[in-house]
Image (spheres, rainbow, N blue to C red):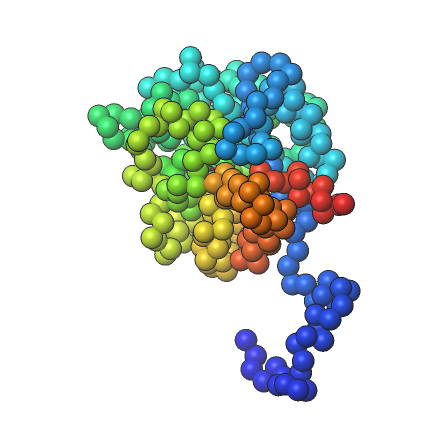
Length: 333
Ligand code: PBG
């Protein structure tokens, strides 16, 4: 920071804020539809949408409806969707093997969206929690999440997704070594152009509550938590270590998650590595704003935009947000 930038009364900061045009010209950061990635929840069936109670305005969609949503997102300039499957109990097993089934719900959704809306980016969630009967992101043996066996299954999961048309696989599990394993598996399968978006700094956050409700992993998880693999909210330097390892293993883009409570991490990751850094405004952040808005306690539309802008200011290149479509519509207003 330069010093001696100016002194009152020669310098009056308010001159720069005095008219709409100059405020716009002087704006350092901007949220545009191109910054927004829309997460979608996919369910089995045809022509159905189920509301998610804890996420006002968010619905679980059958594949045909998801295709329509993809078209709509594309029409509003949203570059990509992040796809999450909501699996019925009958496919959930102790070892989560459905994750690597090339005909699972995620792959079917990917094929349908890829065919209908080929220009939109498709980010596939790579993790076992939608498929395990215990709701953990890994294989559980004697009460412990086994790292390397989990990673082997994640690599297969990433491959079947990529083969189904997912252009960017996104491991969200926080096992050690999974980025390298996924990269090797993709390369061996001739999928060297498939990108990896690593949930590199993902915290063990209570803000995932509504999401777990949406995908049905809350019930399976019960009172258990994910603190043996997701990061401790008390840590920040550790996030840089995580990101460094994932980049070394071949991550193309990295993510910090959640967003608003971790702006310092977004800033440090972006300024340290200078790589494309995404933030995830997670379900609980979304729900918080919507709930207060619903009570008439704050203007939810403005609060949403301000929260997203804070992540851009912190250094995020793009943001996953359940409000992506809403915000894009308003920005184009
Ligand atoms: C699980 C996963 C989670 C989210 C995305 N992928 C939840 C968790 O780790 O339990 C959370 C997203 C959100 O809260 O919006 N692999």
